[in-house]
Image (spheres, rainbow, N blue to C red):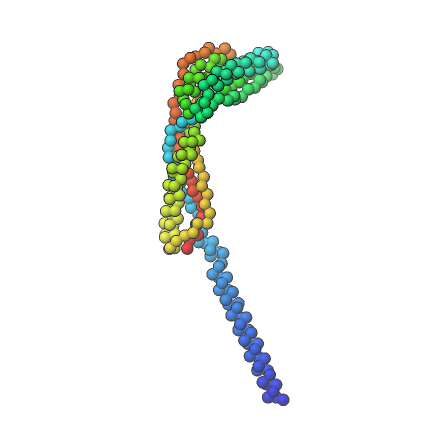
Length: 250
């Protein structure tokens, strides 16, 4: 009985030992895989960077606002006066309108109470605006000079949507090339042979090289017509393309 018991015991012991070895091998392999794919290690190889390219362009879109102001003791009468004046100016300007060259639109139209020193209403003030904008500067300034009863209250320059798109397309490749060059240099500096792109964002920006040209004119109740074109001089703007993102060093 004893030899038989010993034989059974040893056979069971050997089977248990083999099972333990297999289990330990599985745990070891799993641990090795976990170390290899550890997200903390991977995240330590992520680098955030950015690059940009820009170009200076001459502003080619003029926006000119003409306004008329009327005052009186009756709000309805004041409103009628400014609407009549605006309608006449709008009709004249629309005769020279052409999409992109001279766009004509109405701006603010309001009638607000006027207060005396005692804080009580003593009249009404009405203001109406006509907006002229586009790329044809000569046409815009000529129309502004012919409009009767309205004077220039505001004027500024912008970059037209077409010129902005053209400039952005031209410099976008430069910004991307700078991003790629910087990514390669960073990977090499950290001792890696290459990199993979994780995410990237491309944004556009426009800034004026100088404050917008503004011409404030006193709005006369009965402004005399001026057939002379309004002087206007364009400024400079800077159009930029920014590329920002992150890379995985390999």
